[in-house]
Amino acid sequence: MGITRLGSLNLLEQISRGGYMRSIMEEEMGSADTIGRIMSQINNDEIREINKEIYKKMKRNKAIKPMGGRKFVLIIDGHETTASYRRHCEGCLERKIETKDGEKT
Image (cartoon, rainbow, N blue to C red; front, side):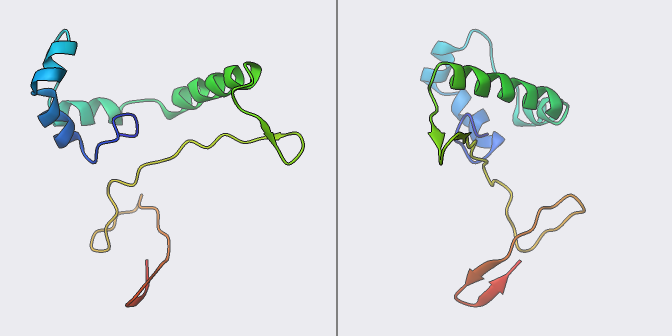
């Protein structure tokens, strides 16, 4: 979802049916359910290795510059697509947020 900058797989599925997306895609995109199943099977360690190689190449090509001396910083922004105050599961990440009604988790 970070690559597409969309809020949901359902929105990606809807957009893929449009004229421009159809013109650039050789085959029809899978449904939101299919994409979700595929994404759940991705090996996170392999993604980390790919990111590490990208970082090394960017550093070698001087695309990122040192901050505070010799430290290099590269931030990959996540995308919070399923934040909710009402739902919770064992794998949920939590943080405290100050709101006008007080602190919420």
